[in-house]
Length: 134
Image 1 (cartoon, helix red, strand yellow):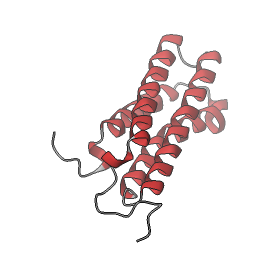
Image 2 (cartoon, one colour):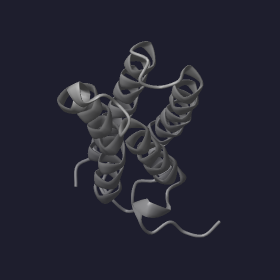
Image 3 (cartoon, one colour):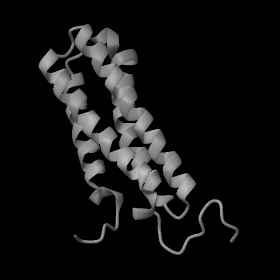
């Protein structure tokens, strides 16, 4: 496996970006009255998953900061699932499409939790642990 040097190379980032773009395209068909509510919220939260992953990657010198940003990303992914549920119930998305997007976020969440549970694989070597004196 080649060494990952940027957040763009992370499988979880690629998956989150892909599903965020799928949501963007799908949300173009949402009603105009949802522009500043559901449409805006689902786009914002789906994009925030990627943005927080990028921040986590750059903060991996410190385990606690890395995990905190991954946790933010995890929260945004779960929020996006909630907006997807609303989009399906409001009949803005077909149930099959909503289910597919929801499952994609479930995969993203699983990947994020795996990173959170095993930060040593990602945190830069030679950095002090958060509970160790420098």
